[in-house]
Image: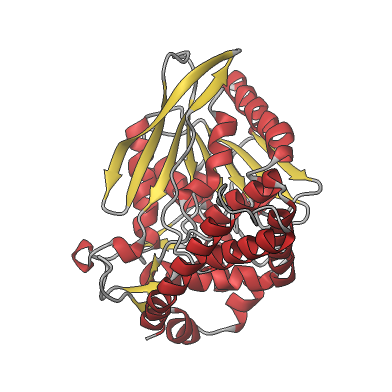
Length: 410
Protein backbone atom coordinates (compact mmCIF):
# COMPACT_ATOMS: atom_id res chain seq x y z
CA UNK A 1 0.00 0.00 0.00
CA UNK A 2 2.79 2.45 0.88
CA UNK A 3 4.42 2.02 -2.53
CA UNK A 4 1.10 2.77 -4.27
CA UNK A 5 0.56 5.84 -2.09
CA UNK A 6 4.01 7.14 -2.96
CA UNK A 7 3.31 6.70 -6.67
CA UNK A 8 -0.09 8.38 -6.32
CA UNK A 9 1.52 11.29 -4.48
CA UNK A 10 4.14 11.63 -7.20
CA UNK A 11 1.43 11.69 -9.85
CA UNK A 12 -0.62 14.22 -7.86
CA UNK A 13 2.40 16.51 -7.51
CA UNK A 14 3.24 16.38 -11.22
CA UNK A 15 1.04 19.38 -12.25
CA UNK A 16 2.48 21.55 -9.47
CA UNK A 17 5.99 20.48 -10.35
CA UNK A 18 5.42 21.43 -13.97
CA UNK A 19 4.04 24.82 -12.86
CA UNK A 20 7.12 25.37 -10.72
CA UNK A 21 9.36 24.42 -13.63
CA UNK A 22 7.51 26.90 -15.87
CA UNK A 23 7.77 29.59 -13.20
CA UNK A 24 11.51 29.08 -12.88
CA UNK A 25 11.89 29.31 -16.66
CA UNK A 26 9.79 32.50 -16.76
CA UNK A 27 11.65 34.29 -13.98
CA UNK A 28 15.09 33.35 -15.35
CA UNK A 29 14.26 34.21 -18.96
CA UNK A 30 16.58 36.76 -20.59
CA UNK A 31 13.55 38.68 -21.89
CA UNK A 32 12.05 39.09 -18.41
CA UNK A 33 12.95 42.63 -17.19
CA UNK A 34 12.55 41.52 -13.56
CA UNK A 35 14.96 38.63 -13.99
CA UNK A 36 17.79 40.21 -11.98
CA UNK A 37 15.61 41.78 -9.32
CA UNK A 38 15.62 40.44 -5.78
CA UNK A 39 11.99 39.37 -6.19
CA UNK A 40 12.64 37.65 -9.52
CA UNK A 41 15.66 35.73 -8.27
CA UNK A 42 13.81 34.69 -5.09
CA UNK A 43 10.77 33.40 -6.97
CA UNK A 44 12.96 31.53 -9.46
CA UNK A 45 15.00 30.01 -6.64
CA UNK A 46 11.90 28.90 -4.70
CA UNK A 47 10.42 27.37 -7.84
CA UNK A 48 13.65 25.50 -8.61
CA UNK A 49 13.93 24.12 -5.06
CA UNK A 50 10.31 22.92 -5.18
CA UNK A 51 10.71 21.35 -8.63
CA UNK A 52 13.81 19.44 -7.58
CA UNK A 53 12.26 18.33 -4.28
CA UNK A 54 9.28 16.76 -6.07
CA UNK A 55 11.11 15.34 -9.08
CA UNK A 56 11.49 11.62 -9.83
CA UNK A 57 15.18 10.84 -10.11
CA UNK A 58 15.85 8.00 -12.53
CA UNK A 59 19.04 6.05 -13.08
CA UNK A 60 21.92 8.48 -13.73
CA UNK A 61 24.31 8.28 -16.65
CA UNK A 62 27.97 7.53 -16.07
CA UNK A 63 29.15 10.85 -17.48
CA UNK A 64 32.81 9.84 -17.73
CA UNK A 65 33.71 11.02 -21.24
CA UNK A 66 37.48 10.77 -20.90
CA UNK A 67 40.46 10.13 -18.65
CA UNK A 68 44.06 11.28 -18.64
CA UNK A 69 46.84 8.67 -18.81
CA UNK A 70 50.48 9.75 -18.75
CA UNK A 71 49.56 13.26 -19.87
CA UNK A 72 47.34 12.15 -22.75
CA UNK A 73 43.55 12.32 -22.92
CA UNK A 74 41.74 9.10 -23.82
CA UNK A 75 38.05 8.72 -24.60
CA UNK A 76 36.07 6.45 -22.28
CA UNK A 77 33.07 4.34 -23.32
CA UNK A 78 31.09 2.25 -20.80
CA UNK A 79 30.02 -1.07 -22.35
CA UNK A 80 28.44 -4.21 -20.95
CA UNK A 81 31.06 -6.94 -20.81
CA UNK A 82 28.98 -9.59 -19.00
CA UNK A 83 25.38 -9.68 -17.89
CA UNK A 84 22.59 -11.59 -16.20
CA UNK A 85 19.01 -10.52 -15.46
CA UNK A 86 20.28 -9.16 -12.13
CA UNK A 87 23.55 -7.46 -12.99
CA UNK A 88 25.59 -5.91 -15.77
CA UNK A 89 29.36 -5.91 -15.53
CA UNK A 90 30.23 -2.54 -17.03
CA UNK A 91 33.65 -2.18 -18.65
CA UNK A 92 35.03 1.32 -19.19
CA UNK A 93 36.76 0.91 -22.53
CA UNK A 94 39.56 3.46 -22.85
CA UNK A 95 40.58 4.14 -26.43
CA UNK A 96 44.31 3.97 -27.02
CA UNK A 97 45.20 3.21 -23.40
CA UNK A 98 48.25 1.08 -22.55
CA UNK A 99 47.41 -2.61 -22.70
CA UNK A 100 49.39 -3.56 -19.59
CA UNK A 101 47.00 -1.94 -17.10
CA UNK A 102 45.75 -4.51 -14.54
CA UNK A 103 42.07 -5.41 -14.35
CA UNK A 104 40.13 -4.13 -11.36
CA UNK A 105 36.50 -4.99 -10.61
CA UNK A 106 34.74 -2.50 -8.35
CA UNK A 107 31.90 -4.30 -6.60
CA UNK A 108 29.26 -1.64 -6.04
CA UNK A 109 26.89 -1.92 -3.10
CA UNK A 110 23.36 -3.19 -3.59
CA UNK A 111 21.93 -1.08 -0.80
CA UNK A 112 19.70 1.55 -2.33
CA UNK A 113 21.82 3.60 -4.72
CA UNK A 114 22.88 2.92 -8.28
CA UNK A 115 26.46 1.97 -9.12
CA UNK A 116 26.93 5.49 -10.53
CA UNK A 117 27.32 6.66 -6.92
CA UNK A 118 30.84 5.26 -7.36
CA UNK A 119 31.55 7.43 -10.39
CA UNK A 120 34.42 9.09 -8.54
CA UNK A 121 35.82 5.69 -7.59
CA UNK A 122 35.86 4.65 -11.24
CA UNK A 123 37.45 7.91 -12.37
CA UNK A 124 40.21 7.59 -9.77
CA UNK A 125 41.33 4.17 -11.03
CA UNK A 126 40.91 4.72 -14.79
CA UNK A 127 44.41 6.20 -15.32
CA UNK A 128 46.08 3.09 -13.87
CA UNK A 129 43.62 0.20 -14.30
CA UNK A 130 41.33 -1.52 -16.75
CA UNK A 131 38.15 -0.80 -14.80
CA UNK A 132 35.00 -2.91 -14.45
CA UNK A 133 32.08 -2.28 -12.10
CA UNK A 134 28.97 -4.21 -11.07
CA UNK A 135 25.76 -2.45 -12.07
CA UNK A 136 22.96 -4.18 -10.17
CA UNK A 137 19.38 -4.39 -11.45
CA UNK A 138 16.67 -2.28 -9.84
CA UNK A 139 14.19 -4.83 -8.45
CA UNK A 140 11.21 -2.68 -9.44
CA UNK A 141 12.34 -3.16 -13.04
CA UNK A 142 12.68 -6.95 -12.68
CA UNK A 143 9.56 -8.87 -13.81
CA UNK A 144 8.44 -11.55 -11.38
CA UNK A 145 9.39 -14.25 -13.91
CA UNK A 146 13.05 -13.34 -13.30
CA UNK A 147 12.62 -15.33 -10.10
CA UNK A 148 14.41 -14.82 -6.79
CA UNK A 149 17.62 -12.96 -6.10
CA UNK A 150 19.08 -13.49 -2.65
CA UNK A 151 22.41 -13.13 -0.86
CA UNK A 152 23.69 -16.47 -2.13
CA UNK A 153 22.75 -15.50 -5.69
CA UNK A 154 24.86 -12.37 -5.14
CA UNK A 155 27.79 -14.60 -4.16
CA UNK A 156 27.26 -16.66 -7.32
CA UNK A 157 27.39 -13.50 -9.41
CA UNK A 158 30.71 -12.45 -7.90
CA UNK A 159 32.19 -15.87 -8.67
CA UNK A 160 30.86 -15.81 -12.23
CA UNK A 161 32.23 -12.33 -12.92
CA UNK A 162 35.64 -13.18 -11.50
CA UNK A 163 35.62 -16.28 -13.67
CA UNK A 164 34.85 -14.09 -16.67
CA UNK A 165 37.78 -11.76 -15.91
CA UNK A 166 40.24 -14.58 -15.24
CA UNK A 167 43.12 -14.87 -12.79
CA UNK A 168 45.02 -11.87 -11.49
CA UNK A 169 42.28 -9.24 -11.30
CA UNK A 170 42.03 -6.88 -8.34
CA UNK A 171 38.76 -6.75 -6.40
CA UNK A 172 37.55 -3.58 -4.69
CA UNK A 173 34.40 -4.09 -2.58
CA UNK A 174 32.72 -0.91 -1.35
CA UNK A 175 30.52 -1.16 1.77
CA UNK A 176 27.73 -3.79 1.59
CA UNK A 177 29.51 -6.24 -0.78
CA UNK A 178 32.23 -7.01 1.76
CA UNK A 179 30.73 -10.18 3.30
CA UNK A 180 29.46 -11.78 0.04
CA UNK A 181 32.68 -10.93 -1.82
CA UNK A 182 34.77 -12.46 0.95
CA UNK A 183 32.49 -15.50 0.92
CA UNK A 184 32.82 -15.88 -2.87
CA UNK A 185 36.62 -15.68 -2.84
CA UNK A 186 36.76 -18.05 0.14
CA UNK A 187 34.84 -20.73 -1.74
CA UNK A 188 36.92 -20.14 -4.88
CA UNK A 189 40.10 -20.68 -2.85
CA UNK A 190 38.73 -23.85 -1.29
CA UNK A 191 37.69 -25.14 -4.73
CA UNK A 192 41.09 -24.38 -6.24
CA UNK A 193 39.53 -22.06 -8.81
CA UNK A 194 41.83 -20.87 -11.59
CA UNK A 195 40.37 -17.34 -11.71
CA UNK A 196 41.62 -16.27 -8.28
CA UNK A 197 42.07 -12.50 -7.90
CA UNK A 198 45.47 -11.03 -7.04
CA UNK A 199 44.13 -8.77 -4.28
CA UNK A 200 40.89 -8.00 -2.50
CA UNK A 201 40.30 -4.58 -0.93
CA UNK A 202 37.37 -3.95 1.38
CA UNK A 203 36.30 -0.37 2.00
CA UNK A 204 33.86 0.55 4.79
CA UNK A 205 32.41 -2.97 4.78
CA UNK A 206 30.39 -4.67 7.56
CA UNK A 207 32.54 -7.81 7.71
CA UNK A 208 31.73 -7.94 11.44
CA UNK A 209 28.89 -5.52 12.23
CA UNK A 210 29.18 -6.24 15.95
CA UNK A 211 32.28 -4.05 16.21
CA UNK A 212 31.77 -0.33 16.92
CA UNK A 213 28.04 -0.57 16.16
CA UNK A 214 26.51 2.44 14.43
CA UNK A 215 22.88 3.59 14.33
CA UNK A 216 21.98 1.28 11.39
CA UNK A 217 23.68 -1.65 13.16
CA UNK A 218 21.74 -1.05 16.39
CA UNK A 219 18.44 -0.78 14.50
CA UNK A 220 19.10 -4.06 12.70
CA UNK A 221 19.81 -5.82 16.00
CA UNK A 222 16.90 -4.35 17.98
CA UNK A 223 14.16 -5.22 15.49
CA UNK A 224 12.92 -8.68 14.60
CA UNK A 225 12.83 -10.03 11.08
CA UNK A 226 9.03 -9.95 11.25
CA UNK A 227 9.24 -6.22 11.99
CA UNK A 228 11.45 -5.67 8.93
CA UNK A 229 9.09 -7.72 6.76
CA UNK A 230 6.01 -5.82 7.93
CA UNK A 231 7.49 -2.29 7.99
CA UNK A 232 10.15 -2.28 5.27
CA UNK A 233 8.89 -4.66 2.58
CA UNK A 234 6.30 -3.47 0.05
CA UNK A 235 4.82 -4.63 -3.25
CA UNK A 236 5.82 -2.93 -6.50
CA UNK A 237 2.70 -1.47 -8.16
CA UNK A 238 1.86 -0.97 -11.80
CA UNK A 239 3.10 0.37 -14.19
CA UNK A 240 6.59 -0.73 -13.12
CA UNK A 241 7.95 -3.82 -14.87
CA UNK A 242 8.42 -5.51 -11.49
CA UNK A 243 4.77 -5.09 -10.50
CA UNK A 244 3.81 -7.71 -7.93
CA UNK A 245 7.38 -8.24 -6.67
CA UNK A 246 8.02 -7.81 -2.95
CA UNK A 247 10.86 -5.34 -2.41
CA UNK A 248 12.66 -3.08 0.01
CA UNK A 249 11.99 0.22 -1.78
CA UNK A 250 14.82 2.61 -2.43
CA UNK A 251 12.73 5.53 -1.17
CA UNK A 252 12.53 3.85 2.26
CA UNK A 253 16.31 3.49 2.38
CA UNK A 254 16.76 7.08 1.22
CA UNK A 255 14.38 8.34 3.89
CA UNK A 256 16.29 6.44 6.56
CA UNK A 257 19.65 7.84 5.46
CA UNK A 258 18.35 11.41 5.19
CA UNK A 259 16.80 11.32 8.66
CA UNK A 260 20.16 10.26 10.12
CA UNK A 261 21.49 13.68 9.05
CA UNK A 262 18.26 15.63 8.58
CA UNK A 263 19.61 19.01 9.73
CA UNK A 264 22.52 18.71 7.31
CA UNK A 265 20.20 18.11 4.35
CA UNK A 266 17.89 20.97 5.35
CA UNK A 267 20.87 23.30 5.66
CA UNK A 268 22.14 22.16 2.26
CA UNK A 269 18.85 23.06 0.59
CA UNK A 270 18.70 26.40 2.41
CA UNK A 271 22.18 27.16 1.07
CA UNK A 272 21.09 26.00 -2.39
CA UNK A 273 18.23 28.52 -2.29
CA UNK A 274 20.63 31.24 -1.19
CA UNK A 275 23.14 30.38 -3.94
CA UNK A 276 20.40 30.62 -6.57
CA UNK A 277 19.26 34.01 -5.26
CA UNK A 278 22.85 35.27 -5.14
CA UNK A 279 23.62 33.93 -8.61
CA UNK A 280 26.39 31.66 -7.30
CA UNK A 281 26.10 29.13 -10.13
CA UNK A 282 29.17 27.09 -9.21
CA UNK A 283 27.91 26.32 -5.71
CA UNK A 284 24.40 25.63 -7.01
CA UNK A 285 25.78 23.26 -9.64
CA UNK A 286 27.75 21.32 -7.01
CA UNK A 287 24.56 20.94 -4.95
CA UNK A 288 22.60 19.72 -7.97
CA UNK A 289 25.33 17.27 -8.99
CA UNK A 290 25.46 15.69 -5.54
CA UNK A 291 21.70 15.43 -5.02
CA UNK A 292 21.00 14.23 -8.56
CA UNK A 293 23.01 11.17 -7.57
CA UNK A 294 22.01 10.92 -3.92
CA UNK A 295 18.27 11.04 -4.64
CA UNK A 296 18.46 8.38 -7.37
CA UNK A 297 17.62 5.08 -5.69
CA UNK A 298 16.76 1.51 -6.60
CA UNK A 299 14.78 -1.28 -4.92
CA UNK A 300 16.14 -4.50 -3.41
CA UNK A 301 14.38 -7.85 -3.54
CA UNK A 302 12.75 -8.93 -0.29
CA UNK A 303 14.84 -12.08 0.02
CA UNK A 304 18.15 -10.27 -0.50
CA UNK A 305 17.32 -7.56 2.02
CA UNK A 306 15.98 -9.88 4.72
CA UNK A 307 18.89 -12.32 4.37
CA UNK A 308 21.36 -9.45 4.61
CA UNK A 309 19.71 -8.15 7.79
CA UNK A 310 19.66 -11.60 9.35
CA UNK A 311 23.00 -13.08 8.24
CA UNK A 312 25.20 -9.98 8.23
CA UNK A 313 23.79 -7.62 10.84
CA UNK A 314 21.84 -9.76 13.31
CA UNK A 315 23.78 -13.03 13.40
CA UNK A 316 27.16 -11.99 11.92
CA UNK A 317 27.44 -15.50 10.51
CA UNK A 318 30.55 -14.94 8.40
CA UNK A 319 32.40 -13.30 11.27
CA UNK A 320 31.52 -16.22 13.55
CA UNK A 321 32.56 -18.83 10.99
CA UNK A 322 28.96 -20.02 10.75
CA UNK A 323 27.86 -18.77 7.31
CA UNK A 324 26.47 -21.61 5.22
CA UNK A 325 26.08 -21.06 1.51
CA UNK A 326 22.68 -22.37 0.39
CA UNK A 327 22.25 -23.47 4.03
CA UNK A 328 24.68 -26.33 3.39
CA UNK A 329 28.29 -25.43 2.69
CA UNK A 330 30.21 -23.60 5.41
CA UNK A 331 32.20 -20.66 4.11
CA UNK A 332 35.83 -20.78 5.24
CA UNK A 333 37.82 -17.52 4.81
CA UNK A 334 40.84 -19.34 6.23
CA UNK A 335 41.01 -21.20 2.90
CA UNK A 336 42.43 -18.05 1.27
CA UNK A 337 46.21 -18.05 1.34
CA UNK A 338 47.55 -16.31 -1.76
CA UNK A 339 45.26 -13.31 -2.28
CA UNK A 340 46.42 -9.94 -0.97
CA UNK A 341 44.07 -8.40 1.62
CA UNK A 342 43.67 -4.68 2.25
CA UNK A 343 41.05 -3.02 4.41
CA UNK A 344 40.19 0.69 4.36
CA UNK A 345 38.05 2.47 6.94
CA UNK A 346 37.04 6.06 7.60
CA UNK A 347 37.74 7.62 10.98
CA UNK A 348 34.28 9.25 11.07
CA UNK A 349 32.27 6.51 9.35
CA UNK A 350 28.74 6.46 10.82
CA UNK A 351 27.59 3.52 8.66
CA UNK A 352 30.37 0.94 9.13
CA UNK A 353 32.20 1.69 12.37
CA UNK A 354 35.91 1.29 12.99
CA UNK A 355 36.86 -2.38 13.22
CA UNK A 356 34.01 -3.79 11.15
CA UNK A 357 36.13 -3.94 8.00
CA UNK A 358 39.35 -4.77 9.83
CA UNK A 359 37.67 -8.00 10.94
CA UNK A 360 38.57 -9.51 7.55
CA UNK A 361 42.18 -9.83 8.76
CA UNK A 362 41.09 -11.95 11.71
CA UNK A 363 39.08 -14.26 9.45
CA UNK A 364 41.71 -14.74 6.74
CA UNK A 365 44.21 -16.40 9.05
CA UNK A 366 46.25 -18.11 6.33
CA UNK A 367 47.09 -15.02 4.32
CA UNK A 368 50.71 -14.08 5.17
CA UNK A 369 51.20 -10.79 6.99
CA UNK A 370 53.30 -9.52 4.09
CA UNK A 371 50.17 -9.72 1.90
CA UNK A 372 47.98 -7.78 4.36
CA UNK A 373 47.46 -4.09 4.98
CA UNK A 374 45.00 -2.11 7.09
CA UNK A 375 44.45 1.63 6.69
CA UNK A 376 42.20 4.09 8.52
CA UNK A 377 41.73 7.40 6.71
CA UNK A 378 41.61 10.35 9.12
CA UNK A 379 38.90 12.96 8.75
CA UNK A 380 36.44 11.15 6.47
CA UNK A 381 33.07 9.54 6.94
CA UNK A 382 31.51 6.70 4.99
CA UNK A 383 31.23 8.55 1.67
CA UNK A 384 34.80 9.83 1.94
CA UNK A 385 36.14 6.26 2.00
CA UNK A 386 35.40 5.88 -1.71
CA UNK A 387 34.96 9.42 -3.01
CA UNK A 388 36.33 12.93 -2.63
CA UNK A 389 39.76 14.55 -2.49
CA UNK A 390 41.15 12.48 0.40
CA UNK A 391 40.08 9.32 -1.38
CA UNK A 392 41.81 10.38 -4.59
CA UNK A 393 44.94 11.80 -3.00
CA UNK A 394 45.53 9.48 -0.05
CA UNK A 395 43.53 6.25 -0.32
CA UNK A 396 43.91 5.44 -4.03
CA UNK A 397 47.74 5.76 -4.02
CA UNK A 398 47.90 3.39 -1.03
CA UNK A 399 45.66 0.84 -2.77
CA UNK A 400 47.79 0.99 -5.93
CA UNK A 401 51.00 0.70 -3.91
CA UNK A 402 49.60 -2.32 -2.06
CA UNK A 403 48.64 -4.02 -5.31
CA UNK A 404 52.15 -3.48 -6.67
CA UNK A 405 53.64 -4.82 -3.44
CA UNK A 406 51.55 -8.00 -3.68
CA UNK A 407 52.55 -8.47 -7.33
CA UNK A 408 56.22 -8.13 -6.41
CA UNK A 409 55.89 -10.45 -3.41
CA UNK A 410 54.18 -13.06 -5.55
